[in-house]
Image (cartoon, rainbow, N blue to C red; front, side, top):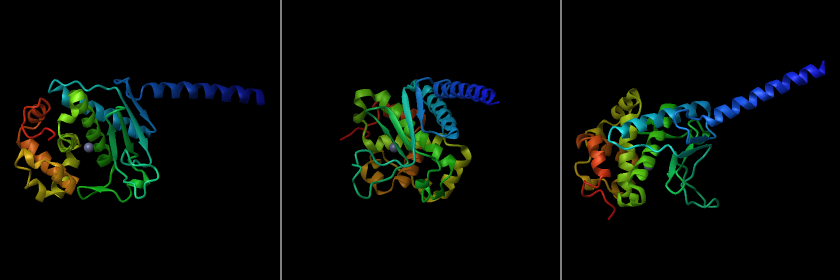
Length: 238
Ligand SMILES: [Zn+2]
């Protein structure tokens, strides 16, 4: 009965189309302007969850996280600005494009992540997902500072992104990271000016831990708000 089969398959096709249209329109039901391209269902779920965490974190300091954002998951992500023909291009976890308000992120389990580790830990979905928090912090910070976002020195953009990433990552993961990096935990930055290009460039992993612990000691969320309000001398671009 070929007629019946055709009818059935077109029925399923229509259901399929409707289903796709619905899921596409609601990447994150509570954030209709947030679009996710190329993500697996798990990555989409983690993206929405991360945005909620970031929005709640910044709302407590009176900053609203604008959800106008597009996120692209890819097999590999290179540093922006590197020409496609450049040899030895630098693969990165991801980055936030300040011009287009887009985050480009490598798939959590992309083969390109195989040799990846951070803070001495093996690469896991939780670790990968925590970089969503990092990139989304860049988004909120640059939105809040507006046209003036370059006023805050680049290493400070990174210090804030790492501080929020480490604070909001799952508690069990945070414990693992900190216990794997006990020496750095015991040796946080002691001066605002120590958060600079040199300390960042030498080793971003160490920089992240030392900045996170320092920012916690200096007041955590309150301190971050003061940095954003330009009340902490030494955080501005020189
Ligand atoms: Zn960053």
